[in-house]
Length: 456
Image (cartoon, rainbow, N blue to C red):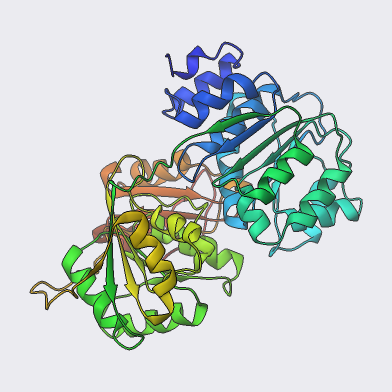
């Protein structure tokens, strides 16, 4: 079977060129199975986990059918978290470059409401957001949903787990019944099955296996208690010497306490949990994903839907409450065909889930690592600079790269990931040149304008 995107005859030629420009030539399994139907307007139920290529699977049908000349709301995409909504929006905007003037609006809670109202008055083609905030705008009559012809629910199981069932049904009551609906879910429990029956018409069911197979993830379990977990984590870091690690905790206070304890050993992690303001969460994710820090300590807010690749090691400070969350946690490693390690610390409160895991994977408790000769090296591959300008100021990755290379004379090999957000940008640089570059770039114009630049 030809699984290249150019085999999709109903796909817009310019959209195909944009895909190829960004390096997408061949379809993943979820794309190959769903796109022939969804591009022709069929409702879709897609059972697929994070990392399977779901975003492109629903983005292509949306962009392919969008009428750019009709400047009104045509599509709504619902996601469980701000992080996932922003990630979807960013990917959509990249693909939407195949045609001028496609406007995509992100509506999430946790950010100011009134600026969103102002943006809605100026209309858009596509809305991406969380159910609670989109419903609030609908209830306050901030936009008309009469032109909505497509609804997407991404990570639907997660949305129901988070209590969004009533909000989703309320949103659906506002939008036209004649529409295309695409629902994607990592699991298909009874509540998702009921939701599917209620909101989809003659859907095509598409199911793919997880991209994170057990043979790619080595799962290791160590017995511990609350008082020796930090010392075990230090031994694990010494043993594996990972360049990128996520440590999952069940509670925010555990994240903060563990970070404080690791700093006593000159290990400086980032922390991510719901107490952080959105801008701080965005910055934390940017700094970790561009390899300016080696360790991220997080609650399950980071376990799915985040654009963080190349994680070599996942450590469960404690096991989550259910098997599905565990699967999503360890799925942060072994992505894109790579292998990875998932290490879990098992104390008395974890025995129930641990027994389920041992039954599923034939795993047992390992003896604790002995004293390791080498010490963990916390030196990151990059250091980041912050620029107080982004997409709203019409800055692009190319503009920033040009200012760094042609403008202040860096070699392009000294520049890592460039993350351009709405109002700011983060650039990963070789640590040897980062401090000088932040000073020189602040003294030079980027795209004809001066910006504040400083080292993070």
